[in-house]
Each structure stands twice: as C-alpha cells, then as structure tokens.
Image (tube, rainbow, N blue to C red; front, side, top):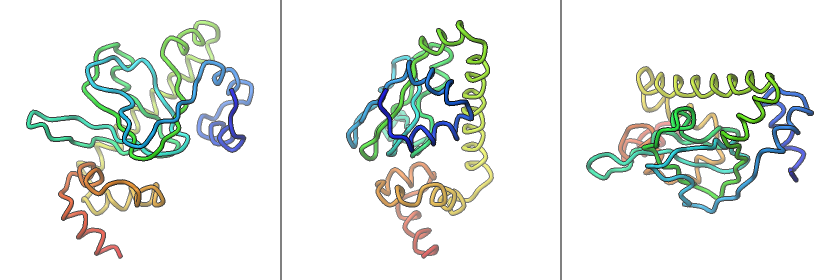
Length: 192
C-alpha cells in the first residue's frame, strides 16, 4: 500500500509496533478519501471495520426521538473511528458517522484482523491494545460530560486540534459539548 512516510511514522508512534508488524497490518488495510459531509457509515448496520483518521474530521452522532442530531464524538487526525460495540458484538449500530471536512481514513476490517490473530498471537495483543484505547476514549468522554464544565470541554477540544476546530460548524461543536450555539459563542468570546 502506498503511503506517505510521515503517515507511516505517525502510525508507528501511535500503535507502538515494529516496522515489520506495521507492514503486515497495512497489507490488510485500505485507505479511503471521503468528501466533506459524506456519511461514512449509516445506522442500522453492523460496523465490521474500524478506521484511523490520517487527515480530516468526523462526527459520530445519534438522532433522538425528536429527530434532533446529537453529536457524541468529534474526532480528528490520529483518532480511531467506528462503533466499537457493534464491531465486537456484530449487532446493528445506532450511530451515524459523517465527515466534517475532506477526510482520509485507513480502515481495517474485523475479518482481516481475525485472520491475523489466527496466524500470530501477537495480533491478539494488538487487538487488546485497540480495545483498551476504545475503552479509554469512552471513559474520557464520560469524564468530560460528568466532571468538566462546557468551557473546560471546549478548551480540551481546542488544545487537541486548534487548526481543525475552526473549520467545523459551530452547531456540531455545541452539540458535542452539550450546549447551545449561543453558549458556545459566549465561551469563545470569554476565551479570546
């Protein structure tokens, strides 16, 4: 698979695996470039793959009983995307994933990962590492919602990805923070 050397370096650093193992993983991966506002996955289907954002931004959201979209996650460069619960259980997902910018994603599917695991126990440890990252990401999100103010959540998001945050529509950021767009405007004014 052709890949920019800097992306390989980022993957090596993020995944903490050897060059040989990365090459083995990349043989079962594929890269997709999604256009802005593209639905990557739709709800009511099984997520049989996970993705690593090489460049771009996505939101994971639910549609509530009133028809309102609630952004659960905003994910940017170097984040893993997908509905991990659906991925491991094989049950249909209730989430939707939409690109907020033109987004390049490196995907791996469940079947390919299971084949790697069957060949070499190393990949079982790798799968556990991905599982641990998914758990820690979910815990961090819950901690932010329960223990941080909206302003602290916004500052954390700003710290993580300032260059991308300015390109994402305010309505998605405010939904992710659990506040109105007007409250987000007030937070931004206070920070400036």
